[in-house]
Image (cartoon, rainbow, N blue to C red; front, top):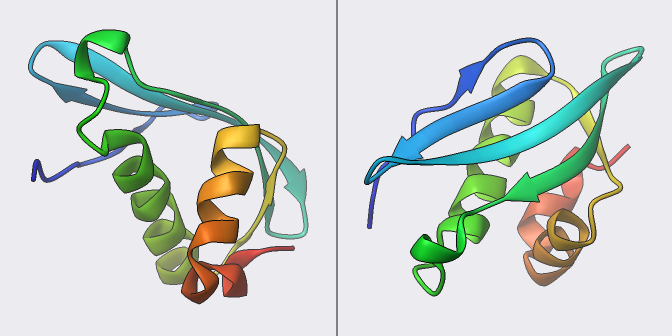
Length: 91
């Protein structure tokens, strides 16, 4: 599977796969808490598990940089719920 490297512009984490941009939009809530508002994978890349992998990379980033997540985005919330080992990053 494709290895994803996230670029951070202060309100979005992005990566490029086959010329398409995958994105996580977020807002810092303070006290080390990130609200995840949107996870987007273009339909051209659908069915490859990239959305799940993208959320997984965010979980890794949260652990490494010691912050917590509030997944407002339904997709992000569902993926974290499906991976009990990711729940440690929830605020």
